[in-house]
Length: 226
Image (cartoon, rainbow, N blue to C red; front, side, top):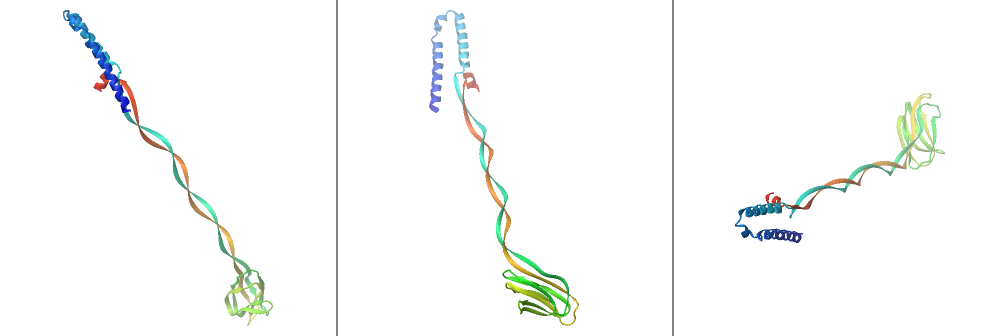
């Protein structure tokens, strides 16, 4: 690039020298005896020089900064809700008795069957008079017993056939509050939700800068005085 500019400048200097040599080759002395041709020649020379300086023979190189836009990909984060499965232990309940029951001489009986592993018989009873609450494994084995007018029940029972019995010891015909249920745990799959951050490419406009070089032919007048 520099070598090219140097060659162009040398060519312009040579052109200017040729013009000036032509002007110098004019036989001015032949006209010294007559001032009018001399004046005319001087005016012609000035006009010729003015024309030469007005011709666009000078190459000027200019550089300028230019802004331009390009499209680039930028990573953008976003959040989504995703389901996932977990295994949990859930409590199951089966009700055996829930309410008021009238006492009788043979007692209030609630037969039930335990079909689940690790099952518990839970509940409570409340009676105006003292009595006995029993849990009997069939055919006739007492596995839990409590004496009193009220009590809390929580006994683990293996699989089998059972009867829960409340028998009043003093007076019959009273209403006794009894609540009994079988409880056990089972594994279940449950759906849970979580927030997950993901990324995606998004096109964006980015402004850049670059140097632009231009060449222009100008006159000597403009080159010297600008």
